[in-house]
Length: 275
Ligand SMILES: [Zn+2]
Ligand SMILES: [Zn+2]
Image (tube, rainbow, N blue to C red; front, side, top):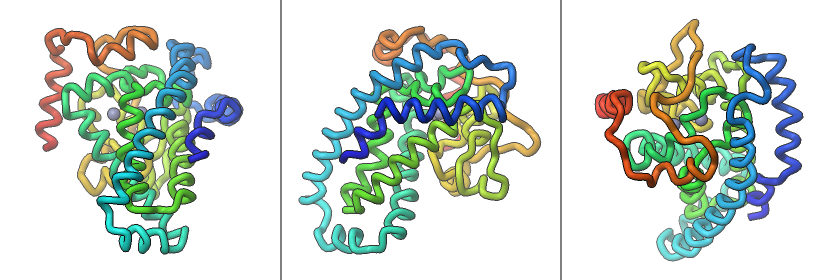
């Protein structure tokens, strides 16, 4: 489980800054965006405080899953899974983990109580690598749980799961970065920053699309992919106010609900149309 603590290491944060800050200058998707853009200090709090909360939450649920899966999942199956070559386990973990992420992410967009939690992430109005951290801890724990728990329960090697978790972390920073990058024909398989920017786009036609965290393949399989040719997502965020500051954002999903805004109702209609 050492990889879990490594994910939130301060040195990793500095390495990420050294990698992404120059790349965002060289290949900026939005050239007029400042390094110290709006809410950057708040997103820094997410990096450090969320890291601790999520680590504790994840360790607890992974331990519970391991205990439960020893009873619920047949030993023969766990042994067969663990007996496969590492490269095959790795491919299976990527597919299974991102399917879990896709399904739960879609649920976060379709269940109003979950959307209130996920709104915090969608309040990002200027995309960059640091903004990837702006995720409510409950959102992080549940989506990471949906990705990782089936893999732990089925007995995949900790090496394969650890490699996935590290790749997911760096890929997530890349997806949110202010870098213009698309993967050409591989767009149908792997999520790119251009792909994820559409997920955050304010335009109604892009709402509730591109749910995959790593493999855009799942959006193509389930008919939720949106990558219009020759166009790029320009404006980000949601149509309603999310309070400023980490403590208020943490409490936001649990505050008494005001009447839903028109934009939120349209959002819900879009989802029911999607099925
Ligand atoms: Zn989302
Ligand atoms: Zn995002």
